[in-house]
Length: 413
Image 1: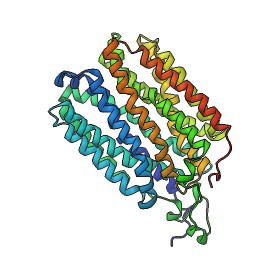
Image 2 (image 1 turned 90 degrees about the vertical axis):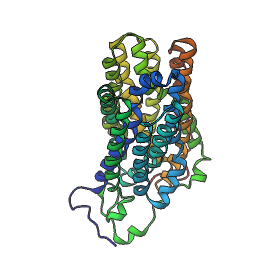
Image 3 (image 1 turned 30 degrees about the vertical axis):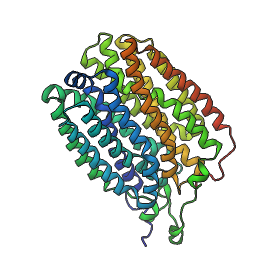
Image 4 (image 1 turned 180 degrees about the horizontal axis):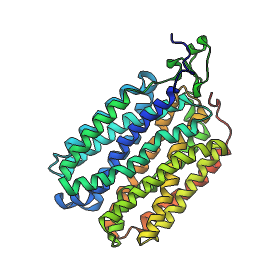
């Protein structure tokens, strides 16, 4: 058994955070490049905007929904193997998408590759980060998932440039190779628990005999019956109907309003800037303010920003929307796993986060594709955007009631 190494060099928890950052950067960055492919896929396969949007929705449904499987598997087998397999599938899915001869084959390659790959990796690596920290859990969680924000900032403009220079098929090959090499390489650094490195959470020293003690926590079967889990589930389900619409439709929306391709992609990158700021800055702020109340504020912020988007028609208002939405979206993603850990403890955190994210999966499946089909019918995004804002308003009310509900039977250790 290893002895305490908490005072020797950098606390290894930050290495785990860096690995989780890279996995989320590669996985979600690859997923959020999809806006760069909407127009060429529509053109080459003579497809409607709704049917093309469904490619992203199916992938999102899988990568959030699969958490209910990958979470328990990570609790049993460890996150490293699942993350490595997930990154391999992301790379393979992108490579196969480059060979698609129909929109149905894009569904099969992209949706399954990205969906299964991110689904296997995301919940396990984020759940692992929660075990390494207590006092700085909000900060660590925010840094880990800030890979999503940085991926949203970097990957769509890169994909847009590659599509213009090489074509969409060659771009998928390049992105697939990048995802596999970078994602698998960093996944090898993931370690499931600080006790495996002879230290406690946040780098605190622990007695050697304490390393054999398993972390406490509520079993998933008990957690999902609590008022707090049910409230979080309902709030996230409603919120997800609108939250992922901008990642697919903001660029087409901007193009429909006369913006250039470069300006439209810049707006998506602005969401990435805001999201990164939200994850870096708000996670630490939430640790001081109270993570549960902070989560309510994030739902309210997403409702307000989506309502603003519905009436934005030029670059400046759209840029304000993109930055504001990115900040509150980033804060929501950063703090949600930490709140789950606060409520239910660490022993089964991967399983519980995975179960919770099935709500996000359903919303992701319905929201972006429904917005696309609504546009095909009405040639306007106003109604689906306002519906997303209303859904997030209802999520705010539910989250507020959840914070006031009786405590879970065991809090985080």
